[in-house]
Image (cartoon, rainbow, N blue to C red; front, side, top):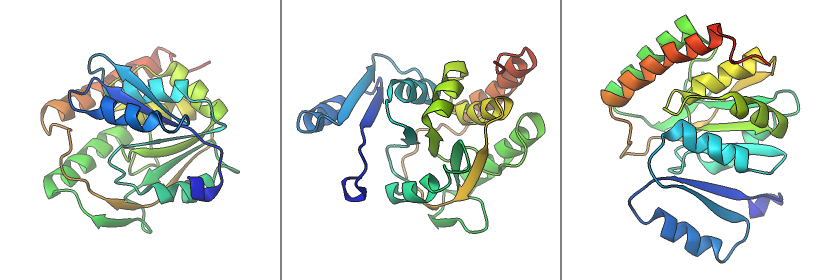
Amino acid sequence: MDGRGYTFEIVVVDDGSDDDTRKVVNLVAGKDTRIRLISNETNRGKGHAVRRGVLASQGDVVLFSDADLSTPIEEFDRLLSYLDQFDLVIASRSLPDSQVLVHQPRYRELMGRIFNAFVQALLVRGFIDTQCGFKVMRREAASSIFQMARINSFSFDVEMILIARRLGLRVKDVPVRWIDSRGSRVHPIKDSTHMLLDLFRIKLYDVLGYYRR
């Protein structure tokens, strides 16, 4: 980011981890005031963590990225170039020009396809990869979306895209380079079941009108 010449901040959200995340981030933040830490005392879920970080951010452009950088941070430039025409730009591993350099295990890729089939059938059509943890938004879009968001699980990505659609915001998916990072914390049974149930919860919230101004 220094090399790009942007004025920027880095907000790290620690979701109740029991490792040295807080210690390491505080050590770095002590040397660079552009870095700050937000900590949850207990684990609240990825959706809650991202929502808290986005709403605490202050920039005109908001990027959220998984900490493992499976989508290399350099891909920010590619997504940023679309913000002249769109309000929310999402990275995709599944478009024809996407470059998946290291694939997930086959069972996880299959789980992803099944999940996306439910997404397409129930909520959002037109996006074949809603779950890539790398998305860029205009400030106004980020604030509007995450003030309405309710989902704390991994399904929050679907909710944010649906909210953007309901608010009439322009959404674009863009191919990126992606490298699987081993050691995923997503449990193949427990978390997948929770994610599917949350799709129905999102559907209910939508029917009840919670995602409209």
